[in-house]
Image 1 (cartoon, rainbow, N blue to C red):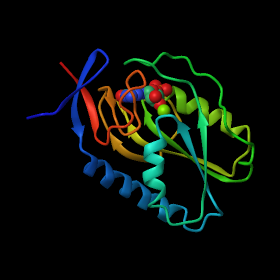
Image 2: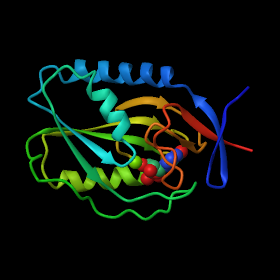
Image 3: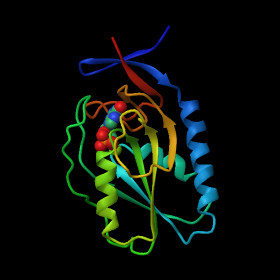
Image 4: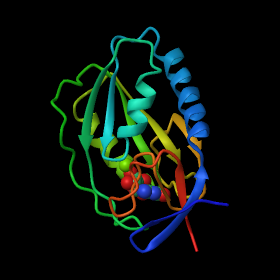
Length: 180
Ligand code: 5GP
Ligand code: MG
């Protein structure tokens, strides 16, 4: 019997169980461990709110010395992107000359990450890479390279593991998808 949950007006069913998420998080952390083994104290920049659970699980698997900071960018409501991207808050300016890894919950059209990337460039970091838990390749339309992708999905709307539907569902340990 498939477990169905209700968040406001929508019903959701499990799409990706927690064990599968954990394997994908381990695999992406392993790649980052290899690539940054010799780098001078990289900074992980978690994009709030969605990335908090992914970053907290992934960082436990990171083996080099690092710093963590959280930034906030445009909010997203409902099942379609609003197209409204505001400015970046929470950055203290200490990224100059540093290796930065932006940590996202999901990259959809790429509008948010592109904006984030451009704002960060103004602080002159040594490098910027993007690490995202989910990537929607069929929706992505920007040029920013998304180097670290834990999982690729289609254009379906998902919730759980930090991702919300109208602010609900972030606590779920599995990933859920809308159902009829
Ligand atoms: P983009 O700017 O790449 O189109 O959208 C990125 C943002 O849209 C994500 O950070 C996230 O907040 C939201 N988003 C895109 N797709 C989904 C989805 O399937 N589920 C949830 N919960 N949020 C999504
Ligand atoms: Mg996000």
